[in-house]
Amino acid sequence: MRVVINICFFASITLTTVLMSKIVSSNNQDKGPFDWRDDWELAENLTMNIDTTGYKFPSHIMFVEQPGNQPNDPLYFVLELKGTIKVVTNDRSIHTFASDVLPIPQGPNSFDPVGLTGICLEPENGYVFVTFAYLDESQIYRNGMARYSTTPGTFGISGVDRVDLLDIFNTERSATSHQIGPCEVHKGHVYTAVGYGSEKAQAQNLHSTLGSIIRTDLDFHPPADNPFFQDDGINTAIDFVWAYGFRNIFGLKMVEGRLFATENGGDIDRFTEIFKGENYLWDGTDWGIGARAKQIFAPAVGLVDLDYISKANEVLPENYRGFFVTASSGSPGEIGRSVDGKRSILLLDYNMDNERMGQVPHPILSYRGSGMQIPVSVALGPDGLYFVPILPNQEGRVTVLRISAAPDSTYPHRLGTDASPLALINRYGCRQCHMIDGAGGSFGPALNDSLRTRLISILSESSYADRVAEVDRLENKPFVDFREARESILQASDDERATRWLSAYLQEPTFDNPKASMPNLGITRVHAEIIAEHLLASAPRSDSDFGPLHRLRFLLASYVPELRYRHLLIAFGAGGIMGIPTAIIFLRIFRRRTPTSQ
Image 1 (spheres, helix red, strand yellow):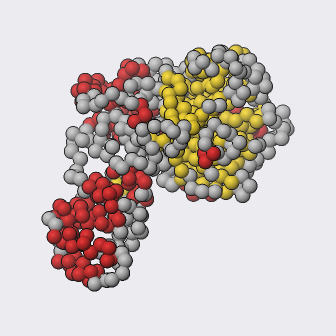
Image 2 (tube, rainbow, N blue to C red; image 1 turned 60 degrees about the horizontal axis):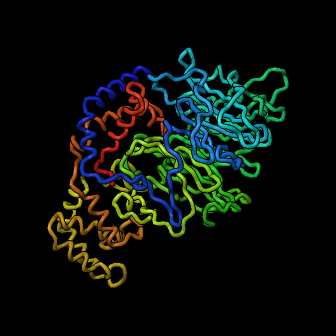
Image 3 (cartoon, rainbow, N blue to C red; image 1 turned 135 degrees about the vertical axis):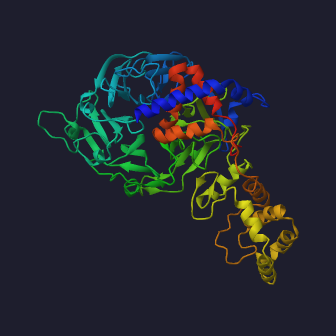
């Protein structure tokens, strides 16, 4: 498989080189000045700013709990996936805290999207813990952890006295997207999530760290009060396991001494609370993911990082407090606006007393750009909620963004106000039942390129006019409200008839058929017309619309890992041979507007 992937990357690089000048030129035509805010829509009473910029594939952000008050005191740390830890000071200077963190550095020609994945801080001793996956000398993926020392309390801009934890992982196979992940420090202990690697059965094996939460002391020793600790003088995996039965935990947060996680499944994700010594039942199936979930996300949205906004925190407006907050990385290979809930920042209302959700999760930010982007980390800072997109924007900049309270903000794009077709399709949940533009459910018929033809055929039959005549005799609502609409459909030409019918149907599914099973979604007349015109727009994509570069991208997606890291292999394929500038150009190429972009 590795050989196949590498061959695909060499092919993609060659194709990129051949097409680069033509595509980049086409991509830049008829576009005004780039405004990075055009990539994101934001909830009311909030604004957003670029805090820092200049990273290469950032994978995680972590704040100093009580930062010093000097300009050069560290404020937050940023991991770069390929092996560098950056630290940002109060004056927003960016320093290299540690480089070549991976035990075996990834060379410039590496295609492997493994690397630094988690960071957590212990202020009393000034310890910085990082987790990582790497390719060892035998070309096997391994997990690992490291601890750096720095200034107690305020930390510092460089780390010293590195200590590693490698031995308990050195007989276990990690894997891209299923590697070791986030960590949390609480009362002198480090809690770390470990993905299942490449063997599903290991998640139910207490003699493996794979698919588990492990717990160590600050020196990487297993505490004797771990639930499965065996006092035999030999430290093995079972001594470290705190809880097990997990697939891929990408978000971990300790709140008031209680541990919570967001986890990626195959087709569903989950948010859950984790208790000492318990089995979280993942058995290789999505049913296993759902069995111990507090909240299921189906279809999967690619949940990654996790933080908590306490009710006492005054950084954000009151209606954003008391929630968990998580990032959603979306689905592999997405370009442009995605379905609702993907590539978003989501609030999760979990009732700590009742141990259940209080309301449906909802976004406070979503991606609305025309390119490829992946939110990967979110963290509450002293002056806002920070989040990290991992890929360059259209200017080639990789930024850390800060969301803050602003009741009078004139931020240009608000959630729920976009009237573009795909935004409305998301808002009204059309994809819950219907397949649209390649994504959605199968409960209702696919709303694809054949929709216009199907409607014209049905509406042209004499039986349709007979049915309308029967409905016209009804004297109750909603039928009396749509008499003129039904008459205009009968009088229209074929194309106009299909558009008018679909618009009326979206507003009131029973308008010409009392037995229609689709519920009323509350779609307004204006919005119904916009959606109808989009769904009936002229039809099949041509080869120029869905050309060889796009087809190659989806071919690659079928061979490489899932969710957020699948995107990175594409980027590394270009960056490994031609360097980071070419990777940026490669990503810009993928931002070409497609027929489904808005």
